[in-house]
Image 1 (tube, helix red, strand yellow):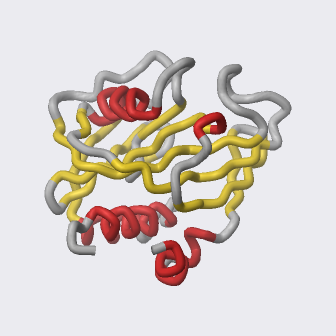
Image 2 (cartoon, helix red, strand yellow):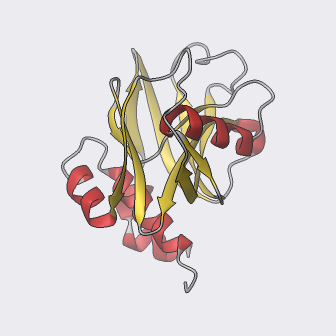
Length: 182
């Protein structure tokens, strides 16, 4: 699958740059489970039937990958469960880690003391979800404005003109991997 994925989603596998506050980050998408000792964050692509979960926050607008920082001593599955409840009022009914976003941070210290630095990974997983209530939120989390399920076509229309359009490639790859007939 990795060669095929690189051919279908070449931009996803290109080195990327972004900023977190005043610091530069370099990152690249990598297939496979990240090394556990380097995991700092989790991101989850949630499906409900033929629809995909998206959240809109005050701080970052729309995202197809709810998630956040792993707490001290927290396992990846626990972090995925907590983040889905906090950001989407959802619970996962299945999940599969399929990739990691590999980061190198130019900041002099980590975002939080317990996370790896200057090199770390976001775990990227997909699975099925059910929305069970309102987002629970967290003291240091984003302000959730909206939680919605979109068809793939609706997600393409919304995120195709969005600043984080690379998320469509991650979504497309997750949708492919999720198909039972692949």
